Length: 160
Image (cartoon, rainbow, N blue to C red):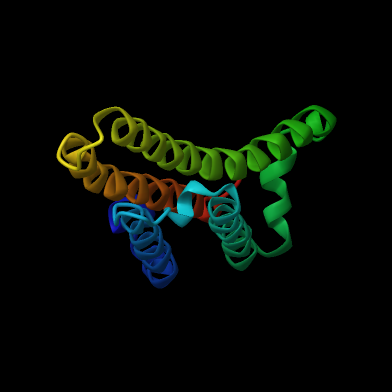
């Protein structure tokens, strides 16, 4: 994490680490027969994305104060009407990106498992997919973790 954010990013590791553990736990719950992973619901993934989004802008205001708004306005004053909507859409797309990526991957995994259970009928046929589900659970949590710290790092940078 320090490689991405630098030394000044150590203080928000507890939040990002908690989000990582929460997502891994939610993903792994889905591997228990009869349970549905909470991350296969858009509400859960959206709430995690909103926390990351809000904390990104908290970091930006903490490091830059009110001047953080310059990040959204662009390099030249007369380009503000063009740059501001683009930056606003880009930041709102982060919420959609984080939430739909996690939701889609976990829901897709559940659908594949359900189809294999229906076709095979036995427990051992979907076992390789369930084993791959452990790997997918960790990868998806790591991707969310990595994207979040990249957004945090971007909020700490000075606007040019």
